[in-house]
Image 1 (tube, rainbow, N blue to C red):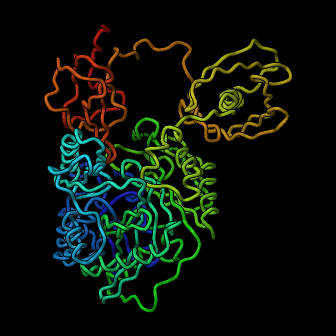
Image 2 (image 1 turned 135 degrees about the vertical axis):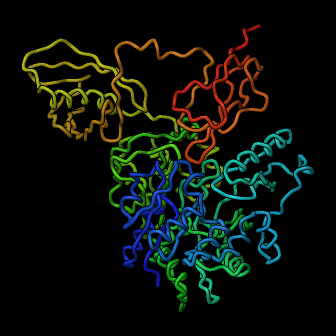
Image 3 (image 1 turned 90 degrees about the vertical axis):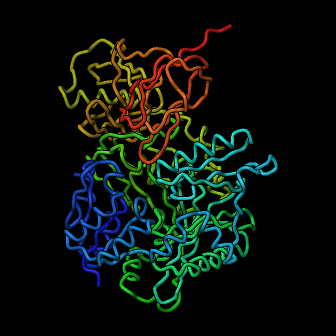
Length: 623
């Protein structure tokens, strides 16, 4: 019996595993980097061991340090979580060689699926349907579009859709460079890209006695940069017979590699066609939706399999529907740029929330941008979607910009509600989904910020005063507010303030009384879900940058610079010049105009803050 588990991971998944361990009276051990010294997973564990350094390569990817930490802390088992070393066969062997229990599949099973090209060969031999890889040198116009994929790793790294034959060579090179940086393996391959395909996967659990159970299906088609955003179980609107074929293929895949534990087999589904993509030999981020509809604890099942338990009887039956949305600290309108800073408040009441953060925690630059997973369950799909969208809309999120509004709009989009979505959903709809909708209360919110401030710092004036003007910035733009204090109270742009307390302001708008929650964090004030910042009366002239300046849109690391790029290089508008890596994502910075690179301040490996000057492009004068 397992008595103490070290989780070789961080954040949300470490906290998730700890929760089940506590319910089973199993002692927990965390590992943490210097950047995670005060992270939630390190705080809630029974014991925690420091991994010196901040970057993943210094810490969570150092298998020998993690094994040593487990032995030092007295753990007798290791759970890998997902990401980092979770699909590293050498790490699994090191854990077993140290006399510890590995809460995962056999190293040989991990190895069999570690390379997507090798996995496809195995699946083809087992009769599992798949898309055959293409020879990159033999791709023709008739083969387009194609998908370039990294042979190792996951999370969308090293993936490129190619629609023009002339772009293939460059995208192969770019994908290889990204894969090498992310996984230490630059091997890539090419396969047909299926338009309007859906990403559907099967959760399997296998014991060490030859039993394999398939826990239904999940649809994970809504993805950004090939990374999942919204997932649900079961996968809706599958063609007749497809679910049975998926289950059959998934169990065949597991049996082929003598699998044990929890794993996921991923497929591309287009109508009646089913194509094997890959097998993730670990727990998936989206496992909660399967837990919700089957009423199981997949982490508990993992622990049981690791202890040698049998899967007795028949697989459980599912009921109802569950939908999960990944809440990211990122700005979808700015090319998904990750955001950092203090998370002052995070509350999504009424539904399941899996997170690695608490109020007041810092969101750093070194790791994934996911703040939490919000999961709603209901008897029907429509009810589950409505419940999740409503909970996110009412959520209190104070801190860096998030994708909350995008999630709400996506959940309510007609293509999603009618189950007609596919993996290109955001390619078609991102612009519309991120266009700031007019917020009728944003100007009023700015007005009541002043009312709130005066109630806290000095109270109401009893004498008439001159009209006042203030300017505020929000996600919906800038707002100029006109207000006046008089004997009858404060009015702002025709709105009457009925009361103003430290955390609540009540306004009368067109005869309707409305309540606004108000919270202040430094120079930013949150009014319900609207964040407002007071703008200075006069702009700071030192904040201006020279035309053509390329500024870092986020804090991160300079991953690489375009080949041959130096001061004096001629560039074309749209040319990729610099790649930044932040929060496990790579962001391309392009030339804003055709001209000459007159300054280059970025160097590979350099750590930069948001707004840092990376380069300057001087635009060619018009002819």
